[in-house]
Length: 190
Image (cartoon, rainbow, N blue to C red; front, top):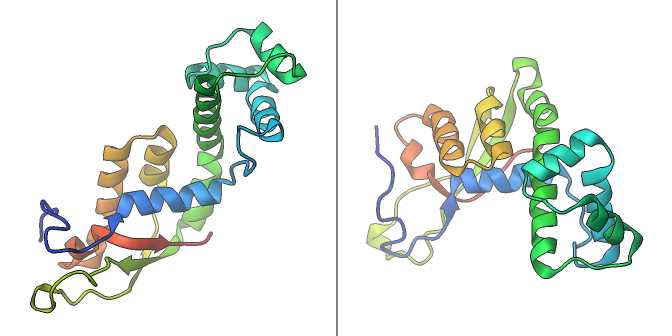
């Protein structure tokens, strides 16, 4: 069984780690607020999401939004505007809380009662690699039945665990799984 790539891109191949592509796809499924946090509408939507219940406020504080209730009220009423640093904290707290809130739903949706979800793996881009050094790497599909570890690592923002969880699934491709550690894209719809 091949080991993980140590010198990826040495000969000109381009791509991203498979777990990063999976995280991008899960982010797309999470359905974040599309209006930027720098626009008043986007800021208010995120603040309402983070402050509408006591549970949401607690999760926002744990996620790093540690301003007083008085400051939050001033932001909501438009009397004050958050600094750039606080806008970044609001965005990070929003994404963290949204991931935690949607993780259980996504796990059930992707597992589909044991049937799993079909994943399309688009191989790395070898257009910059000299012809004699190019590998034969093709488009592959894989049915992933156990999403629990992948979604839990994504929700926690734990990249090393997400990488390990994804590699545990990609190993099902057989002896060629190392060719799909780096990809151009991973797609799945649930």
